[in-house]
Image 1 (tube, rainbow, N blue to C red):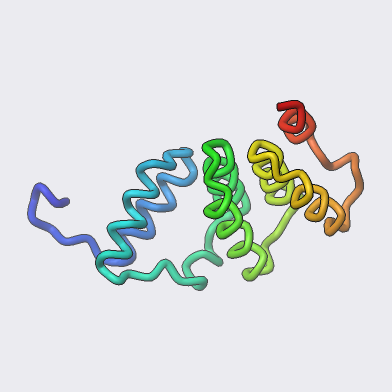
Image 2 (image 1 turned 45 degrees about the horizontal axis):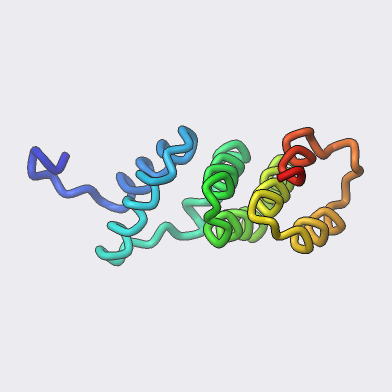
Length: 130
C-alpha cells in the first residue's frame, strides 16, 4: 500500500494487526502498533471484542514466549474486559508468567480460575521447569 502511495486507515491497521497476531508475528505486530501510536490511531475495545479466543490467546502466547509480559498482560486484560475469557487465555497467560519466572502471578491467576486442574495443559507445567 505504501509503495503505491496509499495511506492505510484504522480498519486496515486493525486487520493487519489481527493477521500478524494469528500468525504469531510479534515483531511485525509491535512495529505496527508503534506506527499506529505515532498516527494516534486507537485499537479500541470495540474492535478487540470482535477478535476470537484463538486470536487473543495467540497474542498472549506470542508475547509471553518472547518475554514481553506487559504486552501479554495487556492482551489478557483486554480479553477480560470484553468478557471473552476462556480456559485457553488463562492457559497461555499462566504459561507466559512461568516463562518470565513470575510464579506468584501464575499461581494467583490459576487460583482465580473457576476451572479445575485438569484443564491446565502440559505446556504450562513444562514452562515451570525452566
